[in-house]
Amino acid sequence: MNKPKIYIRDCIERIKNRMIDIWQVADEVARDKAVGTIEAELEELEYIFAVLVQGTFIGMPSPPVQICMDLLPLMEKDLILLLERVDTANEPLSRLFSVFDIG
Image (cartoon, rainbow, N blue to C red; front, side, top):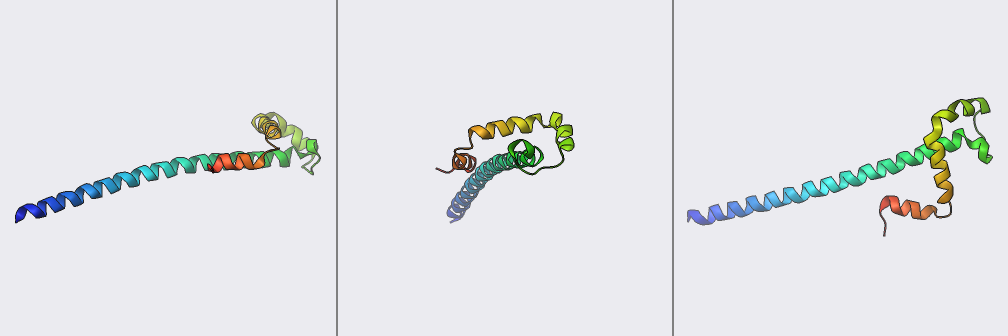
């Protein structure tokens, strides 16, 4: 009579442990995707900042040229990003799909 209770308790404990393992794996995957999404969002914000500051070169209203020239040495990474965006300007949806892993 005592044996079935122990067996049921064992089964429940194993199921509980499996569910915890599954939950931990799902949590890790979600955190990894969140980091990738935040990195893509940061890159997008850097691009917007670069366009706002260096907009004079592409015909957009921007801060005074003196401020742009003072920031130019500090914006090497942003200028490289602007040049990369010129290559992908024809396919904006493909960039969005690759960031959110659609498809």
